[in-house]
Amino acid sequence: MWIDRRFESLLQRSVATRPVVVLTGPRQTGKTSLVRRLFPNHSYVSLDLPSEAAQAENDPIAFLSRHGIGAEGSLLIDEVQYAPALFRHIKVAVDSDRQRTGYFILTGSQPFQLMRGVSESLAGRADIRQLDGLSWRELRDAGIEIDVETFVFKGGFPELYERTDIDVESFYRSYVATYLERDLRLQLHVGNLRDFERFLRACALRTSQLINRAELARDVGVSPTTAGQWLSVLEQSGIITLLEPWFSNATKSLVKTPKLHFNDSGLCAFLMGVQKPGDLFSTPLAGALWETTVFTEIRKHLASRGGWQLAYWRDRTKEADFLLHRAGRFLLADAKWSEQPASGGKLPLVQKEFADSPPSAIFSRAANAFPMPDGIRALPLDAVGAFLDETTHNTRREDLP
Image (tube, rainbow, N blue to C red):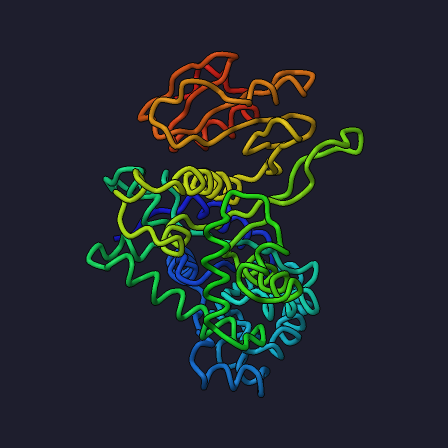
C-alpha cells in the first residue's frame, strides 16, 4: 500500500529546477521508495552494495559512465555518503551543463559524510531536503483508521503501516540496535554502546523539556563534552531537534535554553518504556509525549510547505510551547493531553506580550475544534496544517476546522 506524502510536490519542484537534489533524513522514513516512485526515469543505483560503493569511490569516472552520465542519463544514487570521492566528479558533470535540471538525485541516512561532501563539492548546485516519517494528516488522507493514541505510540515510520503484522516493540528494538551498530560506530568513538543506549533513553525521558547537558551527562555517567557530542550527532542524524527559544535583545528575561524534542513519537515512546497505547493513560510522561507529537506534526508540515520559523516562547512565569514567526507575524500554540481542555493556561498571558494578539491554539485530543476564552481555539491534531496556513492564506479563525 502506498501512502501519498505531502512532501511530494516540493520534491518534484526541486528536481524540476535544480541540477542536484539531496534527500536526507533518518533511516526507514521512506526516502528510497519515494524517489523511485516519483522519478522512475532516473537510473538507480544503491551504494549499500559494497561492489557499487567500491567502484564509485575508486573509479568514479567509470562508475558514472556505466550508469549513463556523460550522455543523456539522469541518476538516482542511494546512500551516496559511502563514496565521498564521487562528489567531486558529480560537480564536474553538473558544471559541464549548468542548465540541466534533475541531473542527480542523492539520498543518504548519514548526514555527516553526506553534508560534508555536499558542502565541499556541490555548494550552490544542490537543493537539500529532509524527509521525516508519516504525518497524522497523511495517514488520515490515506484512509488508515487508527485513533490518535495509537499514532502517538506507533509514530510515523511507514513500514509500521505498510505491514500491520509487525510488532511495534520489536521494530523499534531492531531500529535502535541497527542505528547504534551501523551508523553511530562510523561517526563516534562510542566506547560502550550500553552507555549510548542509556543516553538515548535519558533523552527520551526529557523530551519536551529544556535541555540541561550537565545534568544529562551526570545521570548517564559520561562527561559533559561526550554528552554534547552525542546530542549533536542525534540532532544531525534527524533523531532529535533542539528547539530554540524566541527572544529579542530588548527582552532580557526570556529563557534562552533550547528544548529537546524527538522527531518521532513512536521511537520516543519506545525509549520511554511505553509498551502499548493504553499505557499513555496511566503514565505521567503522556503530556510530554503529546507535546512532542504536536511538534513533529508542525515540523512535517513546515518541511512540505515552509513559510514559518518555529521556536518556543518562555520567560520566568509563562510559556507557549510553540511560536511561529514569519515576516513580523506570529502564531502561538500549546499542546495539552486532554480531550476537553478547559482553559488556555498561560497562553493568554503570552498573547499580551505582542502588540497584536496573534492567532493562538491549543492542540488537544479533541475530535473537533471548539472555541475557548480569549480568542483561543482548541484544535484536533489534524488541524495543524490549517492553523499554520491561517495567516499565510488570510484564512479567518472561524474557518478553521
